[in-house]
Length: 293
Image (cartoon, rainbow, N blue to C red):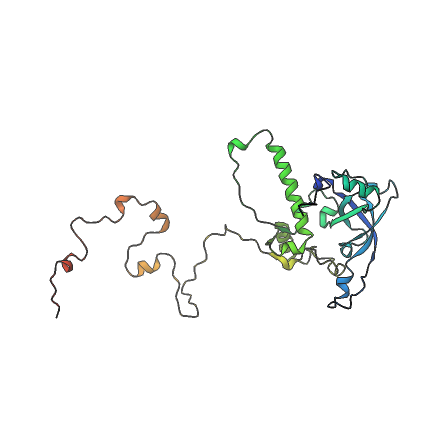
């Protein structure tokens, strides 16, 4: 590794992704290796030759690309994907430039498939996602707020959008994450009384081979913290016969003075318990003489 380290060939790679439209595909079924444990045909046919065209070139020219892709099994005619155009992109490595000149590099490297409104270039595509992620509230210090704050916010939005696209297209990545139902999905489910109108998996029958798409069963219900206190179950008992009381009821029933949590926070020192000078607990027992046999 140290003699021949891996060097990046593209800088600012995220901003150099190009959108492609899938025109067709041809599955590539690999020959089964009889010396190894048998694999299913599904796993052996994930590789596919896809025919692509740049989205910006549609209606302008007829330039098409045919390349093998490991995500080819996810793509269908009309789908939109992102990839690197290695024919026109600028390399920062001389070896990569020589490999391209000698024809050793493909014309296009497909990175991921796009879903939902992102694929159709809708203006509010981010808001129409069926999932959302929880994030911590960060307070920006006053000295960090500068003229470049707007630019920094734009870069953060770009980073977040790129991350969400990666999460949306990578099931393996989502296994270690908690995805929550978005507010849009909850509203649609409430309006349709059962979620019949939710279009999250409306093409599930047609996309049986797409095992990377976000499914409804992956999403969790969001935790709501503003519903107020829990409802009191008066007279309710559990399986062990334990009876539940509202806060302070048990103390009042036993004749014990009780101060609630809010009242205790506002209690002054003079209202709290004050030790009595000269009164030591157990003093009479300490001064008492005992005889042992």
